[in-house]
Length: 485
Ligand code: NAP
Ligand code: MG
Image (spheres, rainbow, N blue to C red):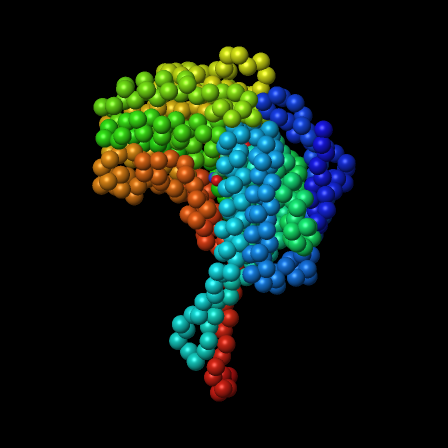
């Protein structure tokens, strides 16, 4: 069994208490590695390293071209190591190997995108009404604390590290306790690629104390968080004490809306893909499936039938379409919602643990029909393969139900009527809206939520903006004394 160090100031290190956390393979329920269990003192060490890299180490003064080239080299290295990295991600998360392979390429693409964007950070000349030159300079925010979840470990790390490094920030990143391995692997390449020590630090450990002490640390300038709304609220409160910049990418209960005029076969596939990809452990999962009444019965039948054909199996098997959930905790949570749903709605598929699996955190793809939008399974984020199908009468009804949620991360609408589809796009309060598709995500386009799904945007130029300050510079061009007194 491999022991990984955390990555602080360019070196792999133990925690100061020499405490370790087990890392589990959720399909076999075996310990596959151990990582340091960081304390507040370990976080302090990592923040000091990042502070030194930023304040005196010269990182923000490197040229944008040089920072971009380092990100390109990192992307190339990820592509060179894609096979072993995908296998590691697969074993650690339980996601099917085919999906893990896709994720690794996606992470590399993210570093390439921001490698290119590093040289496109543009200042501005402000048209002030004086004999003066007024400029806006863009400067890195400083030391960024970054906290990520377990569902897309390397992709989430790339979404955080790439724009921050392109902007010239130094980073302290905490992966989720369950899935620290791929980002630690990546960190081990940084010295040979040429990243100076302290520019990237990876702290492994628990939300409390490691995550919370990063958020509270006075020398951290910004916190970028992806995770649950419950933890997002704690972070916002704690960050208030030091007036940190905060961006939050939180959960969702996203509506996937099907009108009677949608392509029926595509709609069924879209509903399945929208909610069951990555075992349903997706922040933008289309977990509320709104279906127009005129096709409702036929839709529910076809959706339930096809869901029963989803092949669950060992994540490393290329035929597997659904692996286990990430942890025992998540398994218990999703099993709990399967039972809650049985008391709230009509079970039409799944509802338990699949037969023939004596180990691993597997659950059946589960579908409830005739769900009331006020039911717990329609309001609370489950973060597993559980779908709530909700009937609606007409367009106004669909929009009302779609927006009746504390969340506003994503939505999708299926219709062959372009006018209707675009009316719904504009009426739905969500940060991402798909038409006749659900889930494709591109590094070029903004990602983030409305309402309690958070604020701030990742990806595209928006993602880098969050790591930049705007400095106003006023240059007086008048040679006259400025006299007032
Ligand atoms: P989580 O429990 O909120 O944890 C997320 C991260 O925060 C983990 O690294 C966690 O550490 C850390 N954390 C926990 N308590 C903390 C505290 N008091 N202070 C600072 N950090 C703390 O979420 P999760 O269960 O890992 O992931 C699922 C959630 O993430 C879902 O709600 C999902 O919707 C959301 N998500 C959102 C997006 C998006 O882009 N909007 C993408 C993916 C996931 P530990 O691992 O040690 O608990
Ligand atoms: Mg957690």
